[in-house]
Image (cartoon, rainbow, N blue to C red; front, side, top):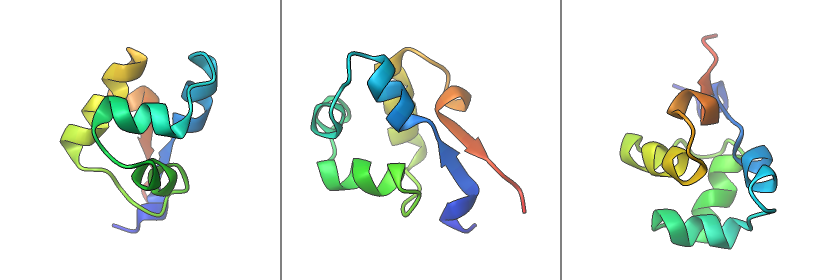
Length: 71
C-alpha cells in the first residue's frame, strides 16, 4: 500500500477542536509531534491502535479520520 492512498482529516479535526496543536494531539495519543506531522502529510500510515487513539481524541469514528482510496 502506498501511504498516499490513506487520506486523513486530522488537520481539520484539530482546528475544529479548539485549534489543537500537533504537539497537543501527539501528547494525547502517545507519539511525537513529528509522527503527527508525517501522518497529516500522508508520509506515514499509522498503526491500527494509533488510528483508533486519534479517533477517540476527537470522539469520532476511525472512518471520519482516515479514508482509504483504492487505486
